[in-house]
Image (cartoon, rainbow, N blue to C red):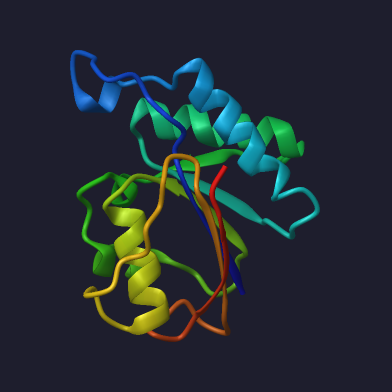
Length: 149
């Protein structure tokens, strides 16, 4: 299985709530640069946080790739979600793109490759990590690469 983890692009500094912060023009450019790294990859599903900036990121990637499936919105990809709970939700039968936020993305990547939460992966806005392994289990995946736009 392959797993790609994408942090949303740069977002507005302020909105009525954190969940309502939209991507900036620069954030959209960052996302498109990261999406270019996904061209030709065997993605079978896109899962995204319900927050506006993650939804916008996921839909930009979907359009850039010509991905025909829908973006699935899941509550376990919010910024402060528990990485252990997120790990429980992953299916080894799919090659997934997860679109989420820090600190969750860094903690989840660290958990998948090290088996613990003590060494999170640094992820800038629109950073894209690729992991590979037989199963999405703690400590069972290898970090193939991280691209920072």
